Image (cartoon, rainbow, N blue to C red; front, side):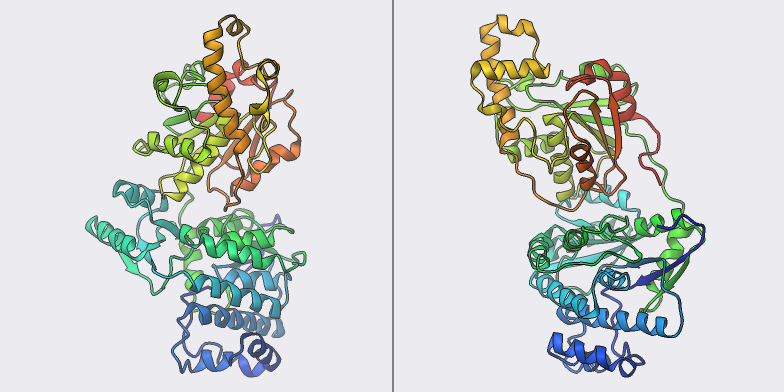
Length: 525
């Protein structure tokens, strides 16, 4: 993105801005595009937009192609009339396809084929509903939903600092509407038939991802800000980002702020629509970005073989920050419970331990296996609509999309298993003097390493959580393996390297405490 104080930004509206008669002044000016649209879609797009004789304009299968065509022709018309191309392009949900078209990712016909198939997949999901919520910031809204037990409702759109949209099943949205109304919160039901931009559209996102494998996208000529990450698109990631967008949150306020940070005097122009996005930009620009809040509580997830005492020395350096160790079954105070090597069962157990303790700003920290489990815990928190951590701090592990270097450790025989653990530095030498303790810890360790061995990474939209990754300078990770954490967060990844091997943390508790509990900004502009 240009590093300057000014610049031109074009906004493309999405679903909800359709209206009978739209595009009236455009269709005669672009007969070739209109004819091509008819060939791709199999119906008269001008007739649909101007007359809507069959009442289909509000049916998402028709709404999305219609808006794409009108947005595209509106932008082409402006260019023909001599307006310069934009420096930065943003589109709200469906409008993002027009932003990518204007940036050169694909041509008009290809974009229309993508939009038509996207609309078809999304239209297959029925029984959902959406609710606009006014006057409540997103973080506060998440807290209200959690307090009322509405964990199956997602925040689908973060449009402005005080305008958000909820998405979920029709029954759950009705419950949310009643609960919020009882609290004096203003809400408005939206005219939709599905829970767009929520967990309920993941199947549609997966189908669309498979469809996108048949397309190749050109390098972008202009900067496009992605809804789901609030960061510029990167060449080579267009297909993944578009498929993630279907079930991912539309982070409109964050996207606009990303532009304003770099182009504070930018000129915004809305293409099509009735100025809805322009009004949102004014509201966002007039509201200061919330300051980063330091966590007051940290949940810790132990490394392989560890229990609630794994990070006890860390507590002394965290000051007033409350430390809550999350204990896995079969160890520590839960030693009588059966061990589990099922990653989903383990993460569900961790979630149950903290779900009722999210009333304060918090962080999550994990080392090695604990890092992967902490990451999966963040995903589960998002899936249940629970308040997210202020930050996730991980150490001693590569990005979760990279297979763990310890994935085969659980297969090692007895002596080889213990020799490997000694090389890692995680097992006290004196432990081998006590056969009963060794037998107990071997069961615990093998269960934990089996979790690593059976872990299969599932691609999901990145978290809206800042991630700090800390590694030892003698750990065998490559830069690419550590950088893989960036795929899992919409925020800039913060990386730190400290002297030491895999268990470098034992010599750096004060530094680690500062990264977990410090009040410094969590991300860089």
